[in-house]
Image 1 (cartoon, one colour):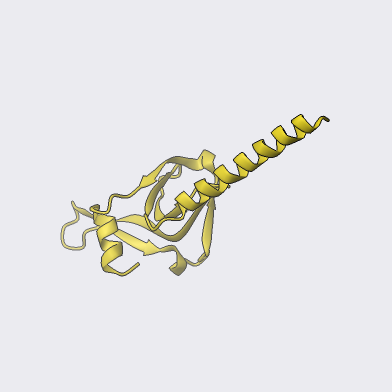
Image 2 (cartoon, one colour; image 1 turned 60 degrees about the vertical axis):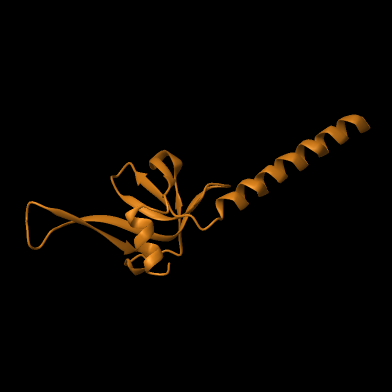
Length: 118
């Protein structure tokens, strides 16, 4: 392999590593994301997508019947850390994710988490 090819390969490797670190850093902000799974479960937490999809500080969004009016439903946010299986982080399989995205700071869920100091 010539010196020119070695330099090109080294530059490509540096660019790939640099982009990887940049993507990882961009994913580690304090914005909460929502993740909708193929099973119908909805998770909220701090999502990273590189090198794999991981959800930390997670909550599961569940629908519960209103106790005062059976025709209405309410939503609850239950911390995943309080679940029986209580993972520190969840590694998500991309094939099982229908969609994901950051929550607006003005969304009810983000406001609830902010008010709780999460």
